[in-house]
Image (tube, rainbow, N blue to C red; front, side, top):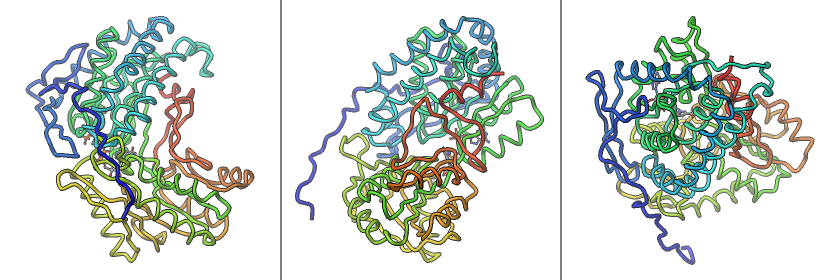
Length: 477
Ligand code: NDP
């Protein structure tokens, strides 16, 4: 029994106004969907309460949005970079000013803990707009030739795990480089993108430069397959990424894909164990494990296994699962019923394949979608939970003896997005980073993001980089 318990510390949900219904943001105004579209509801995954009714864009609406972006392209790309920068700086400042509203909205629609949306997502969103605003008038010095040109209309499709942050990763570099965009947020998390449309209006952004069309996968498909799109940027599952790559093949469209991952978090026996355990917990339980670069495979050196596991279990027992709006919550709600059933299914497969399942005692709320933080030990490389992306708060633990074995196991995956190394030896960190086939390798830390730093994968994790100077390349000819 714990010696004390936390008093509830709920953030007020009344700081944000949610309208009963939303239209599509096309050509600078909110409009209802055409007869080819429809409506759908978005729910709070922590309570299953309907938050709003949202327009679903049909093919005619996609046409209208792409046409609006096309009309806006010439004047927008002809603006001096310093003028485009002013809009981006303005957007960044408005996001900072309205960050409390946005953080609450993001937690309500997505289920992530308010301390994450408030302290991680929103500051990073603003930082991305500030960072790319700074590039807008320096493109000739970015290393892409003396006169790099924008591509045109960018079709951008994003997932539900970091709705506003993924929007920022996509929209900020596209606009800085002089492109116009049509963006589709995920069906389960449309609200912060629609709020962003309001921010664009507030910033006086010329109409048509940013268009937000909501809807399901069919809307995304119609958008990326639209013939008047010059660039497709997608973040989501490898399966949908493959479909998009097929549909774009043979066209002149440029494509970047940021897909799944199955990152290895590698702990050597000389690592500072308490710090490593914090990194393991952050690596897999941050954002309920709905993170493409989550450290979902823990590789522990055999000699440190008992110590790490004991410490990890003790730490997991202190994690607080529950109301995303409570400032003390560590693990919020699973984003959707569909994702919850996928996590359940893969966890049951893990147990049936012979791995040992463990979760700390924790009471889950009766209403909403919840999954207790879980670890599997005795996992082998052949187990499905060691190979497939679970995208939930589930960690598979494996062991190794030598650095070579750790590299071999870490790279034994179809993915290659990220990895973590924990050791006090700098030389070992550098040697491992050289051999790990992952776009990002963190050393003695995990899940650190910065707009100046490129992010992206190898193999089935996709291609192209977002963030940093590299992120501009995807939007310049
Ligand atoms: P999807 O890849 O289906 O969704 C990503 C985005 O693509 C959403 O906006 C989705 O719309 C849209 N979309 C779906 N089908 C198409 C299509 N044919 N053409 C264009 N756009 C499309 O991911 P899911 O939400 O289905 O999640 C499934 C699994 O994918 C997760 O369990 C996880 O393993 C992985 N995933 C990985 C992510 C990452 O960051 N790497 C992010 C999200 C998921 P809609 O939401 O309306 O379906």
